[in-house]
Length: 214
Length: 214
Image (cartoon, rainbow over all chains, first blue to last red):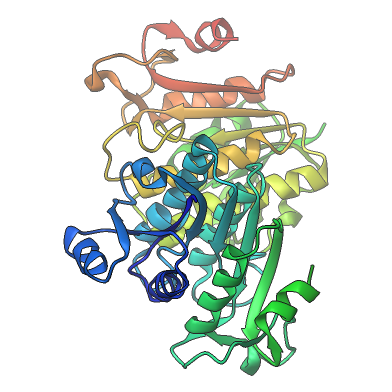
């Protein structure tokens, strides 16, 4: 059985995705930046690979058929890293996926990436990078799922979400754990979606929220 | 006769392009950020329009059939501006051009934008933005010329260039004046090129250097 590569496996969402898939005995490879991070994961029984998003990381894709790109999320790093990681490394991940025959690419995007002009936002430069990363994936020919969560919280997830945007901006948030669970849902589906979802906390269980949108 | 819109007309290259075209009595509209900059140009007899690259600047395209995008060049601004101007405003300029029926879009790009991984460069984040801006233009369906000058100098131009990259990195420079003259050459041609040129100081007159590459 081929593996799922998690790019950004030491990030806040990536960590939870790795844990969820590992606990289900799904074959997963966690790509992290340092040897220490890799050793820590290996001690927990998780396969890890060291890869630098700013150079060549194609080796990480070996024996994988699915990819989750959850690196660099947030918009709190400097915008040089926004360009190099959120945009350029995402582009390279798509290119490597095409070369290595990846069957499904799950992109963790963000609310506003569909149109950086739509909201007045101080993270607009970040949203511009995510817009172009998403567009690159969309036009690549790869099978994709693009997830655009609202504002991320560290609350405990309850597995209840909605993909419908509320008119109240106070409702436009979601816990990282529920984003990770939504990613897990897609990795466990064999049918391919080629769809884009916004994700917010809500009242529907993940499987029906994401299926209903199909 | 329709006009040529210069976006970034107060920039170092844009200023020279405006002057060259104006001195030839070519109808030109200089887009600048402030009313004072516009008044200064109007006092010299140059038509000017005030436009903010970070909001909506579609009004500037009225009665124009050619566009030169020379805004934001350099890579010395913060990378938030790189994302907002070099990438997002360029994307919007392409969108407006499509809506307004622009016949020829001349993009001032930069050496390295064809592949930001090709050179070790501290301006790599800037080159990533230029890569995606160029790609957006390339796939837009607009008639385009993309000019990728080497390192820019303030030397006086002599009208002698080459489009062939030297193996010596010491030769990879060009004066802003010669870049402006190369832009002027394209604006004065009615035939459309859909081509990409690198530009360096050299030994050929601009018309033959750019024609020979056709």
